[in-house]
Image: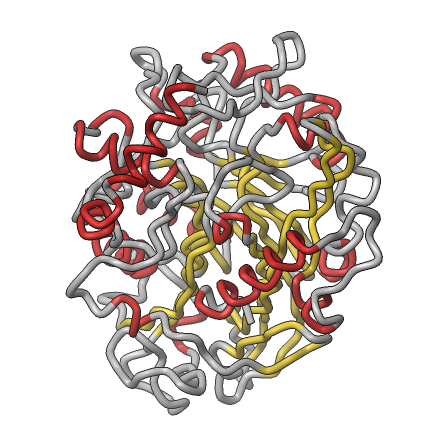
Length: 479
């Protein structure tokens, strides 16, 4: 408590200087394994309630991610992506819905969560598959270890409450990414226990493996006749090491590093295509914590991942919602990827600048332009950390629409047809230090009711937070 109070006092006294040097995102890698003293202070400032809301200077990032006009469906923002390929009849459609980080939280574990998913249940019901990032082991034989309020004071060794995790995993959440900086918090034994826990509940997982053979085997699910492959990689393991010869346990790649070698990730994409995948989704743990925008190095790497043959990137780790974008490109070769390369060029969403990084007009292109979807971060889902900046409490739910069709010659192709987004906010009702009730609220519904709610304990501070998050949702392209 004394250290936290001292840091906050120092930050308050030095506010003009700190705002000058820490107001914008830095062009850094931000990994725990390669963090210097300046980066540590930068991180502590963000964790003490001053999230970075301005992008890296001089890169045009704010302009790139300016809010877009959306079509409303059931009150939620829907963004059309590529138009249906010319001459192709749609034969099936599917939706993959993704939420953000599941971080163990004492507030959530001790609360009544009977109504946790009331607001998200309709969106989950529309999905053919619901995915999340499980940012902690679930090792039932070991003590529960939540995120402490002062995370700079000791190394983290997170471990989810199996009772809480069991209510989500294998139930509403059918696939999780395990590749993140907390994967090895309970060691290799804890990772194996986590895989056992998920296997027992029929919850699929990606990003980790029990053997080199398992790592090489693509994870493909068939959704309404569309074969969708999932891969996952993490930028960091938080100074925890894989055993010699055990690199297969976790997919680790320094994704925040400028111009990182993507060869291992690309090999998985090629293996998935060879196994018959029509859509490839990459769940990537990356970015800088408590920041509203990705930096330029991450944007460049994201584009390279899409150009390696990935159709959708779902990013997480910042504990802050970040924007999403379409990225269009002309592939160097189409030989190893069937179908989508022959479709028409996708339509440019209304309001986008006509630059090389965004979809162009909907005309057939002999160069077979392709478009991928990049969601940089969805924030925290079903988790609650006290003392953060207000904008950090915004969460996102992304409904990714897929389609498949057949042309006159009988050829088939699949593509990303659109994106529906839902801004979410946590509701935590405390009595003293104990959280009595916790649920995730649909901000769209709250806004329609003037940010008023009949929830027991709903008060002025909840309304103020909801209004702040609603404003942040526009910048994050969630409405």
